[in-house]
Image (cartoon, rainbow, N blue to C red):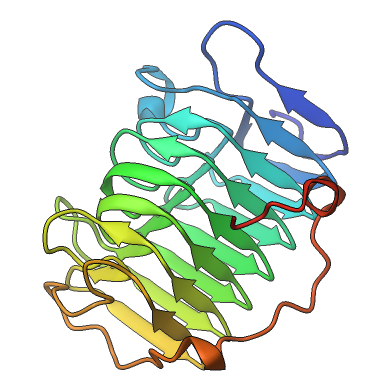
Length: 246
């Protein structure tokens, strides 16, 4: 998207070939009640194969409201990839079933990422961060990060093995039933960055929640009975199918 400002409401799905769905290279793009599905940037020389659904670069800005980002594939950031200097806001949205060969099955960010009242579920990464991988500054509020899988940091990777740092803040959220390989942390992986957890449950992740993170993760509740309750309606597609997080 080379335009300075645009808004989109529709379903965009790849049916053949291999390409990402949207590129935000500078300017501003807003998606409302949209479905971004089946994009594939794997192996693309453009933006290093990042962002199978959407890549945000060139100091661009993306806002996604009440939408579904699903079944996209990339080397980095299967659903959405945010480059340094760019930003993305994800509100009331489902990020589901995306995959990355490297880091960030659902979302990857070197820039500024804000996730509010959204579901990040059933995404996979061959490296770090099945749900989210980050070396930028993500903020997650009232989110559900569940059933994601990665080599390490099944739920969230703050910093990745090849690049340390990142500042992640998670509030009023649930990080549960994510999985990592070997004895790596299934909930949150932290590599020399800063993780702040506020009223957030990290529970039921395998093989452990955060214990084997190379940089310690501050204590969070591990009692799933205290998990926050979602109050924001899901997008229409998920209300019809009734299978979010299943």
